[in-house]
Length: 85
Image 1 (cartoon, rainbow, N blue to C red):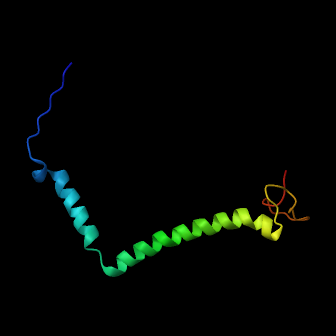
Image 2: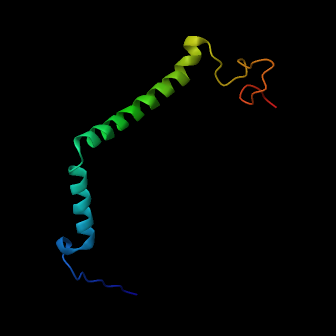
């Protein structure tokens, strides 16, 4: 079975090309504040991830927190985060 397809329009006249052009134009015409907020959001999320990983891995060594153990279980606590069934 053979399937042939012919283009009826050039790329420059296609709807998809118009969508791509409008999207690129919208991105380039963002207000200065919006561009700054986008950049800030990207940098902020990177900093949050790095700090979270640093606390998770360095915290147990620097502050003698329990690391994957129940050594830090609080006695008499009714919280499900500190007790095992």
